[in-house]
Image (cartoon, rainbow, N blue to C red; front, side, top):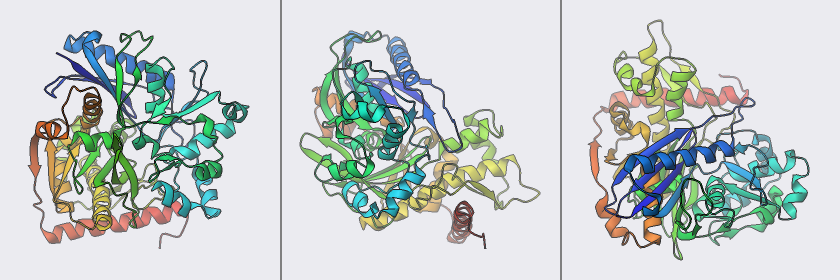
Length: 501
């Protein structure tokens, strides 16, 4: 039996998975690592802790499945996408902590680029907006704030990468510096349509091209393992894809119009648009979904910065719950007529609003509101922001969703999924395998190495767990949506410093 090893390097931890030749996940082990918040709005990771968590997770998954490293036919990598690392090419050591996708430290830099009238250029070339979310301004910030780094970067001594490129480098013993188009398309430096790094954008950001990785297909043998303590030499690293695009692939959303939403630390909705990079007019992003061979598939994406992280906030900061799994039962006991609304703008608002200055809020409190009503409002806030994304996506794509596939840790929450179907007025479909980010990368690695035959075989392997049909009446839905829209308007006014009236 041959196995595909998947490394799912996420925001709060790393997960290693093993997939057998029947496309069944036989083991999964996750290892968390520390989050660093050096200033308000700043978020960092220690790349060495990330690497250690990967090694520990891989070792744990092999032991759990009683699989030898020599039985691993290929490795697939998926990753938190925009998180940025710069490292020394000789030593392999990071020159600064990784700046996480959630970090807002480059908001002023983005504002300055907008002030120079450059946003239309970035929008047209990259499909993205000028927001601190993306990697380009993070790389520029590190170059500006580490003494002597710009000179070393221009000389070719420094490498830039999103986490996938950092892991490829480490797994191959420093032999390969490469990324895939799905990750490159999240950097503000990559031209979507030409499929190349863009010199005009690099000049605007003041990032030297010498630091950039090679861009290879998502399903491709990048190199082989070398010099690792937890895997033997010679295993092909054969699948690389950003986590949200990996989930789209793992959900078998291979046709234009197919869509999924992943409920993780943030929430991310993607719709396959085929070979056309659809320009958004509704505040969404245009991105590369994946490239197989010479064929590039594109997607529309809407991103919410806070989803499952809001439940962690209830648990860790407020101590309303003892574990994340308690939130559904607590929320189910809320007063049915409660008007409490939670806007999860704890790291600003993402698509379709793109307001980095917005702040989270709880509104509609009464004397009778308590833990249950707050828990319910947190779940509802997650679903309502995804409703905004879905409606914008339908507008851009010019088609109505027939259904939306869901995955990620929070999609096992039946109360949340039913409310999502109710406010979206669309059927929600949950698969049997909800860890679809890791699954997508493993499937791509299996395609590159001949372990799996093709997309039709993958499509046949996808299995449904449950469907959630809308059941809320129009009057109640309209009240819920109206309260939500007023609450979003309020937090945007507050964050901008404008009067709330």
